[in-house]
View 1 (cartoon, rainbow, N blue to C red):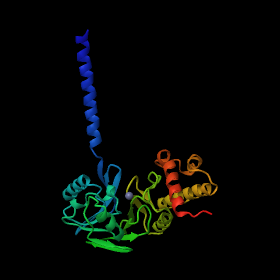
View 2: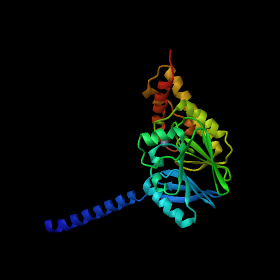
View 3: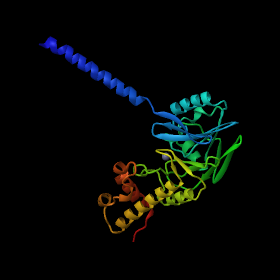
Length: 288
Ligand SMILES: [Zn+2]
């Protein structure tokens, strides 16, 4: 009897191991893609992270490299598809999950970031290329017959997030402080809530049609307004309950943000969003 069972068990075990190896292989294969947004502007995807790049007759302007493997893949694709070098690399903000791997492009590219990013990138030792050029309020990067307009809209998700406007394509690239039909990330870590709302208003006031975020789907200018309203309404819902002395756990149970229940990550992140807003208001608000 044992002789009969053993081969069956061995075969079953082998099948499970093969399945496991297959799953591990599938998980280790990143989802990467290049899609055209408009005109000469393209979107680069690496799993859940996105950046953009602009192709001009004189060279390519690349934005967030995401990580060294992703950047190496992108560099290879750019070389295959276009016969011009990468001339600029622009970081959206200092967070490593977006800007790691910049060294991959540093052989030919001038690296640009907001002035506040320098302290984080150099000080914290981010695994990427150190910026060559920084700016405080505005900067235009011109290349070939194209240009990118960089603006600092104030603190939001970080203290160094910039918005990149591609005027010919009427598109902006804005990362982590705005998403399309999706809740802000978890408990909104490392963010400046009070300034964030103001920076979203400044984004809404900019002249563009296409909003390309660093995560999730592409949208339009009105989506920046929707995101700002969500943050404002969340703030009001949490603040009024804090003023009534309601504890966080009960606020998390009460605040449903019903109008946004179809947004991505609603079930997963709403309670975390409430906790993040509570934490921020605890820091900034002065009670009686
Ligand atoms: Zn970030």
